[in-house]
Length: 432
Image (tube, rainbow, N blue to C red; front, side, top):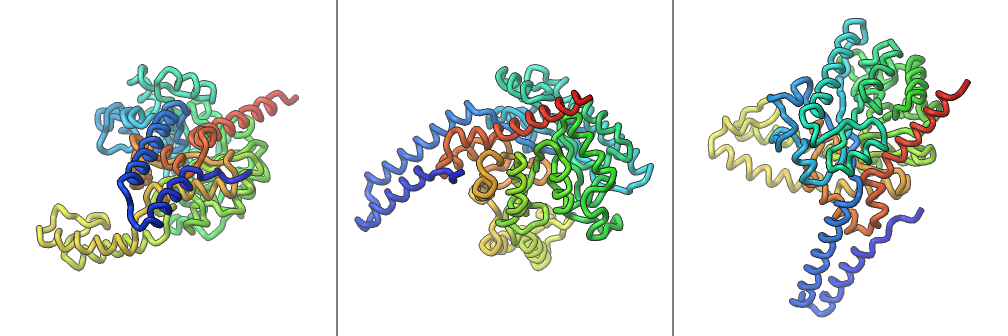
């Protein structure tokens, strides 16, 4: 398909060109530019209120989530996603992640991982039980749309890392019964399901272990197809991606990934993967984690650590502890940080939508969505929590995306994939 027209951007550029040929910016052109900005803002606000807005990946803070210690029912300073910020930003629904970090692959490791996953399922269920008038669990696309029409927030569940499945295939169905509608097959480190794109040497990982999916992983893919669970390929190795594409009877999901052409990080999908994902009807949900959006950030972090040490500021968990610094040290640190900002600028909203643009250009408008990874490392200037979600809509419109395009990116494409996964499951379950 053709890439979205950028009529609004071209009009703004024409205005600038006109005033340049006159040699100065007139009051009339300033007024015209302000009118364009106001018109765009009004259009974005109206559109954002009408479209279904979904985020496919948000982390929770373990078993303390949805307790007095960490209440997502308030505008919580430690959370980028809570019910208040979702309402402020017009976000209709989120997939909350039952995340389990990779650990030892032995009986005790699998038992602990399963128990931890169960506790995190309980935390998400506790959220909807505590706020029945503001949130509701959704386990199907139809439920998502119904809940959104009521003004409540749709809460969906994904499992991040196949590790807690252990070696018992029946656990996939158990997780489905608890509400999980996708599983991210791996995280950082290989597991019993497949190879990860980021091996974990501390666990004894070689560059490759299974060469993609393991024999058990192939069973997991088939079982997820049968149940109607989306298969999430964020975090998996390219060989695992290849095997999933070859074996899955349903389209697949990358719930929180970026574009490798713009940022060469192993977590991102390259153009060949984007095209393959699209050919098989899948969707990439673009992530807001800074190191997946822009190169050079590891160098920035090292430069910040070096600066802190130069001015005598102690480090706390590898980060400058400004509370223990004298005013002179803080002043020298701020001056040095200004120079670091120039050399290694942090990504912002435009960098983020550059990844959306690239994914649309390569995979097509029907195969791109939003997967922030808020509270799991996500957040950039302009889209740092869910209250700022309308900024994404405004930037998409500024770049010339149509209202239909925006609707697809914000939730339509994700629901299309989910519905197709359900359709395939119904066919498989009805086979003799």
